Image 1 (cartoon, protein in one colour):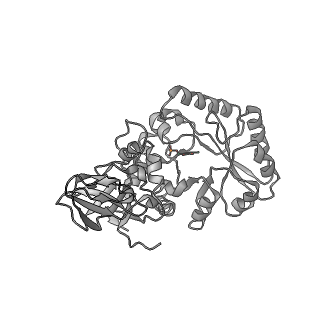
Image 2 (cartoon, helix red, strand yellow):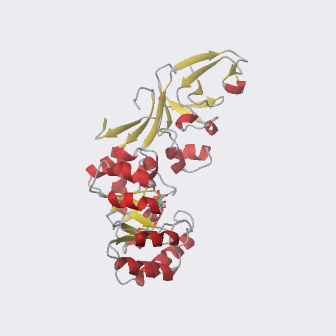
Image 3 (cartoon, helix red, strand yellow):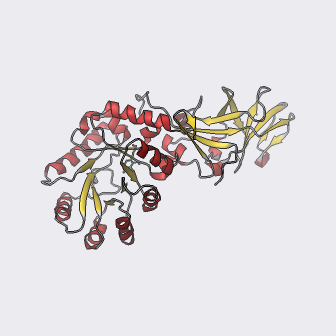
Amino acid sequence: MSNYRPTWAEINLDYMWHNVLVVKSKLKQQNIIPVIKANAYGHGAKEVFQFLIRKGIDTFAVSLLEEALELRIINQDVKIIMMGAILNDQLEIASKHNIDITLYSSHIIRDILASTHPLNIHLKIDTGMHRYGLTDEHEILNVIHVLNNHPKHKLIGLYTHFATANENETYYLLQLDRFKNILTQIKQQPKMIHISNSSSALKYEKNYAFTTHIRYGISLYGLTLDEKVDDLKPVMSLKSKVVQIKQLKKDEYLGYGASYQAKKDERIAILPIGYADGFIRKNKKGYVEINKKLYKIVGIICMDACFIKVDETIHEGDTAILFGGLISTDDVAKRLNTINYEVTCQISSRVPRIYIEGGFYD
Ligand SMILES: Cc1ncc(COP(=O)(O)O)c(C=O)c1O
């Protein structure tokens, strides 16, 4: 889509690299696997992928085969791990395009073993999340043995995912112990062991000396669910421009449902961003920043526009920051009763991403 509209998400790749260095500075383990599924948490998977490759990163994780293939077209050399559920009819495509797959369930084992297409496999161990992964220890050890001796396939990695890294240490440690316990029983370990996510990497960095890679997403984007990480820089900011100023007279109504009535003569700025852009209706009564001041969102948010009650200092052409300035992604998450992950992920593909690298707009 061409970028003509005065609404955009600014993606600061310099901040992203800063965030990589922050995580690396806190950890002994220097190999990272950036998680760039879901369009790099809304930041633009292709651009983030290309940027990190330029910076020397050579291993990435996504969820879907489609996501992996979109990246594989751009680069044929780096490792791309598909973490989501793969089905039998996708194995050939994954093999053909050199996409590492996840062995995530008992039911796919037979298909994988029977596949004539050579596969690079990461075995996911369910240590307590109870989502993807094998749980039964006997089955896990057996599959590892079989794969280590398979004529075509390679067991490349072992991993797990923590359910409570940011909130319940006891449960986190239980999962960690389960994983380590299985690892001690494996004679021929695969070359990649990757278990941490952002929260656990930053909080429990000492626990990962035995792993080969730190696999993480949200802190790459400068966000966290932990309170203590203060040196990350949020990568995305959402911006739009005032395209029209409306003078509402006292008692006049505004927008759908005539749900907002001016209490006195009011000045309303219209921003061309709405719920189809991911700025959902629940944002009503929130605030946006214009010229370093906060102004209230009024009325019902439309599909393509929203209304801001402003003062005389605001004019057509002024830039509004919906988050990423005085209002943080976390403020919006709180407003929407959700987590910061969802705020950036939900910015839709209609919103052009503008990239900043080396201090310059791309
Ligand atoms: C399997 C897996 N690994 C790693 C991650 C990255 O987690 P985070 O963004 O919390 O670092 C996710 C995120 O959902 C995931 O599902």
